[in-house]
Image 1 (cartoon, one colour):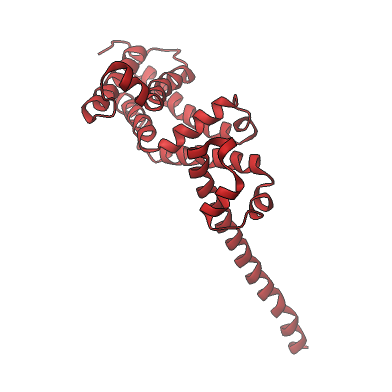
Image 2 (cartoon, helix red, strand yellow):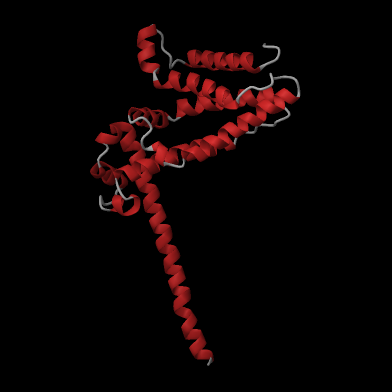
Length: 227
């Protein structure tokens, strides 16, 4: 009796271990393909980012892409989701005390501008997706991440309004769009604008000035007594 019971449970333990190992390996392969696809799509766009290029960059086989993602479109959607997830994850790490709404709002603006500057692939992928009128991102879970970001901003604005620092009835989405537009446009068009304006928009003193201008503009918009 004891021997039969022991022998019958052994395969289950081995099977579970092998299953976990396979799942970990599959997840690692999936993540490797997404990382490679992010770089390839950012460099070549959706049309130019062939499965062959992506597989080569990932050190994998081309057939693994449809196996894990269904299609090239499925992979691109996964890349967009991961891009937004990383942005959301970074944003959630910012210390934003609600009892200091002005300082916290400044931190949000600074984060947004710095993140766009330090993650050029994020900008390039969004530019590519806008060419497709949001066709792929609309099929992703990106909405979940934008909801969290706007909720955080909404909490800060309400906290500031409650303390008499910010105006009441400010719509968080409007302020979010204001911050993103000033940050995203500057970064995505920095090369053409530098040539057009005859000024290096990549220069440290220029980017510092623009970030300060962003902060000043947003605070003047939301404050009861603008600085």
